[in-house]
Length: 391
Image (cartoon, rainbow, N blue to C red):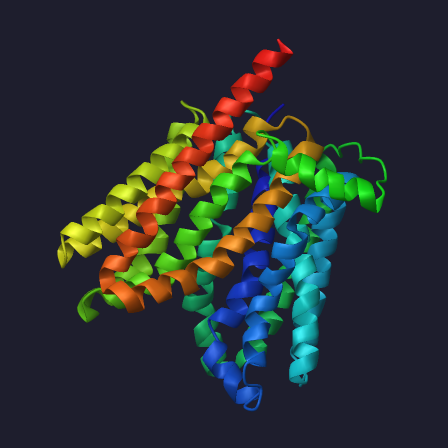
């Protein structure tokens, strides 16, 4: 068996489209105030409701993907996402826009839960670290692409042109999937489950040191990553803000695809995650003890090491879970706790900044890095005991 790279790249492009569901709103939030000037606090729901779906239904989505099949859910999620972006180009009321965003939340979950499962299927064990590292870049890269190409489109033709372009990209990804996915063997779907059984499945997933470990570490990464990328550039010298805002996500992606893949071909992904958390904590300490240029060095080291956590967290899904059904359930838990982290991290760091200024970055990051390291240490010990008991 050889790695089916066309499938890997098409699914990665689908991930960019899924992240674009956030980016297409985040980069034009100011412009939307002109579309719905009387929306008030409801305007914030346009951003948050997609993530809220993930918080509530992330693990459920993993169970659904495991039962119905990753390929079907991935294709369906893209078609729905493209259709909803097409609907949004019309003059919707604020209530109708929020409703379409709620539906987008379910389409988003279908893509981000099914995507890692399909990539793991399409890759040989040797290439799984590279495939999962590529997948892990989709969120940060989507925002970069939207900033570079989406904003000029909005300035020339308005926000609805951006939403139309996003819808077209989703349909293009769906067409690519339809043309390539037949070359990936479909896993046997899981049997139908009752509601009570699904509830017990949630408990079983989070009790398992194999299914839950990627998510239980990933939540600490997401608490840090979005908050730091959002708020840290505003804490450095104004002359260096653009450098930090552009450089931190880029260096995270480069390290994820470069050093991260190299390390994961030599040591287990969980160990790479732990090294990443330790390096990120050191970056946060440098930030505290060396203001000025030390802020830049510490911020870049922090972002680079978070890139290791990012790629290795997704790579740990197939390393710890052998079947497609188990990988779907683990991916669902990652989606669920990942949305918890992205939702809570920024407001927590913002409160700390009001209290402690720039030192809040260190106060916020170091305990979370230690917790992420310790969580994986604990889960590794639980897996060792479980395997010993089976021997």
